[in-house]
Image (cartoon, rainbow, N blue to C red; front, side):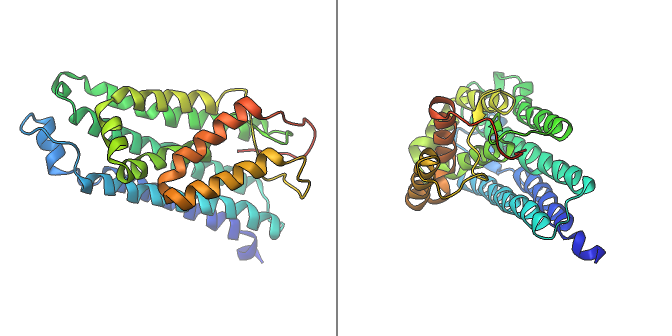
Length: 268
């Protein structure tokens, strides 16, 4: 019986394990071409092998997000919610959706600087701004763990959604050579992403939650439109469309979403 009650916690540990693996993969074996560029020997963009490494790390984070969904689902199914499970879930989330995406952002900044003629003149501390994302994710998770919520929507951008935007970047760069050039030739785009997502995670804007949906089409019209649009984008672009889906979710939540203030508790 004790084993059954701990099944959600074991799933959370799986989430944590995948997040740790994503961190290792993101930083493992940087490409020789990038190292040569940083040393001023050659002038090339990051090689495809480097981008594939970040894509693999992104898929590990995506798998962690799937486990993050199922640990709560299984806990409710088995009536096995516990204080330990709540804290374990938050600890797993900060690694998988805070630290691991920050390592991907760190490497993307690394690649972007290596692609610029002035890379040797750029201070290395600028790369560490990537971890502003992790700090904001930790702040958000700790805040909601301590305060909870009784709202039918998310207050601020959920950390898993922010991490989905991040992991979509290397996938989109691999899909489109234009996006690849844009990202690696313009570091400021990455800075905007890092600080923008960090701000939104701790902002007071209401963001759409899909857990409270029912069959009332009129009440949930915006949610249904977003689901259909997201499915269409993912079918067409596959995983390369993740960042675009989250961007549409952010814009729709800020500009068009008018939440109700009474319903069930939602946290993230």
